Length: 294
Image (cartoon, rainbow, N blue to C red; front, side):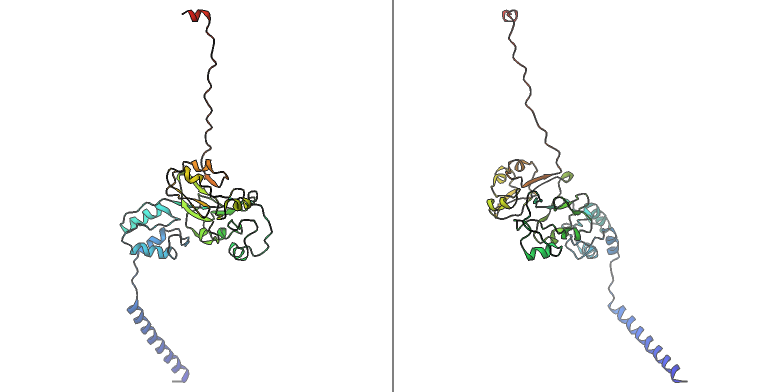
């Protein structure tokens, strides 16, 4: 037997022994996986947005399998419809959760918030935020570079070319919060989605005193407290010269919108208010002599 043949046989024996050892190790340490994980994952949208608080859809599916109740667990993109299907697979009761949607809490358009300089750096809100206060007099407003657009896996956010502000398509938005996490100035907030997408919120994040804030933006909140005094549901609080409306408490009566002197509070997706005119009164007529004698 020549040396080449001997080498081949030796290598084959070593390979066979190594394969047997690896097989024994794999059998010893193998982890049995619940087949329902694949079933649950197949129902999820696959956005891997992290809005559920887990590291992707697979991890969320594993968490659902391990959980004893689905209370507090929600896939924000799939919503209640997907959670009902998951509950059916797991034999649990689905817990309804109010749908949520992202809103842009800044109304500092080019008309309302004049530009004072031109930014020519990297097109990134995160970078621009670390470099300077912004290209307007407001250090709290939207920078308009579109970091929120780039992280939205659903294509629900675009930058309006006229206002240079992000616009959220509520029909596409799943309320995952990826855009809110990407915004370095915390302008985007995930709030309760009202019936037909209606909502009332303060579109301002400026914490400066009223005079300073109003000088920087025509529609800035000046912290005058008129909205809080008008609200009958304790849904509005004032902190650091800025009003905030709790979407879980707000009944969307829109009285705060009417009393806001700067127009900082927005009411979106409402039909136009009906203008009531006083009923016309018939002119008084002078009775004839015949009618007076009756």
